[in-house]
Image 1 (cartoon, rainbow, N blue to C red):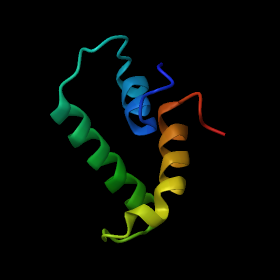
Image 2: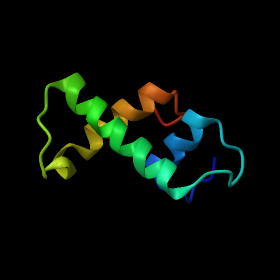
Image 3: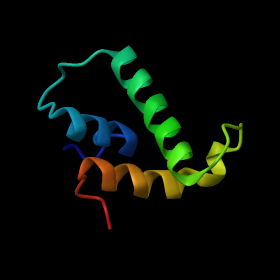
Length: 72
C-alpha cells in the first residue's frame, strides 16, 4: 500500500491483492463503477450525478467491503 495513491485505487489493489503494477486502467474503471452501483443498491440510492455528495459515505462502505486498513 502506498500512501500517495488515491484511496479508491488503494481499495482496488487490496480487493485484487495487487502487490505491484499488474493491472490495466479499464480494470479499475470497471471495478469502481461496479462498486458505486453496489453501494447505491445497498443504500437505496438512485443513480444520479450527485455522487460527490456521498463520497465519504461511499469510501467508508468501500473500505469496509474490501477490508482496507483505512476502514473505521
